[in-house]
Amino acid sequence: MFELVQTICQDHFMKTSSATVITKTLLTLISLVVSVELHEIVHLLMARAMGLPSRFLNFTAVGLSKVEAMKYPAEHLAFMNGIAPLFSFLVLGCGSLIFCRSRIVRSEKVNYFVAWLAIFNLPYLGLQIMLMGGPSRSNGTGNDFATVFDFLGMSPVARAILGAFGLLIFIALQSPLKEVINMDASVKTEEKDFPLPRWRSSVGYFLLIFGFGAAVISCRNNILQNYSEGTLWVLCQLVVWGLASVCLTRWKTAEGKMMLCNWILPCLIATVLLVPLGFEGNDFLMLWIFVLPMMTGAAYFKTLKARHKIFMPKLQSVRLRNKMGDFHQ
Image 1 (spheres, rainbow, N blue to C red):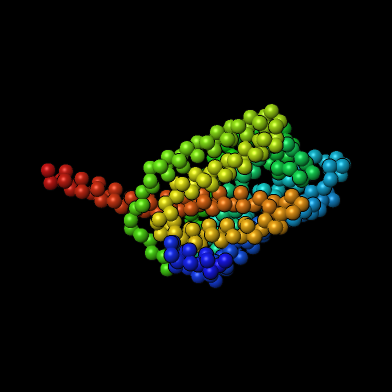
Image 2: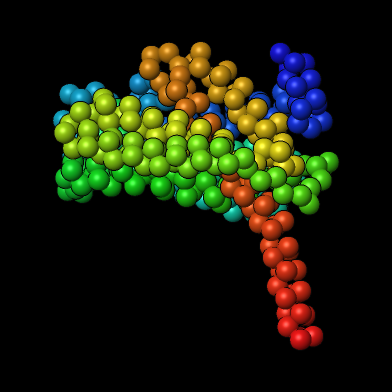
């Protein structure tokens, strides 16, 4: 399998090796598992600190039974649900982003592992907001933000409306990820622009508009308490953004080729390897649908930044020539 991947990458994208793909796949897989399990451990520790008998219900869920939840104060249950998303976003997301930007560690493997912590946990805040229009389940089996904002007195209608902005936040939080994705030293940045075919940009923007339409439909279903359909439309938003970012990314650039071989390929393999662990309805079964749009979105912003590096010097050169022409006149 990895020999086939190596051949494809060498022939079509850039030189790589099976060992590199295997190493980065393992680092990606470990980083994703660590992110999910640390999130759940924080749920567990906060619950135990407040005297709640929470436990692991499966690999990716910590909570207690509905009958047990009725015996404990609502504020304790809200704290149990709310602390983990904040930890994921602030510590694993923002903290990893700061770590990668600081360049305090030169180890490529360490930086790659920490970069994946940022890639998964920074846009995770947007994902939480997208799902907060669903039902509030204070025992820990539902959306964390839905439970917290329900405890704070926000109505289901208001939560559904706020959830409609989740996709926008999800996309916006992928922009800083371009700072954690480092180019390999062997990859030379090409001083050449690769404009998108018009059909691809048209399809990409159409899909993006459709994604925001899906957010409105999800909001409507949640207001009507059709929560199953609302959740399906949330998943639709993720798939549509993933496809839109694929269409809008300039894959022929050096950055695009590097993203394919060193980031998206390990991401795809790692999330597929986690699917067999997704028994009993835990999140590993569907992790790919959350993570791949994060990665393709990061690729879009990475190649967009590269295009600006090429475009801005050209624009400055044109302005300088115009000024020189005006001076001579």
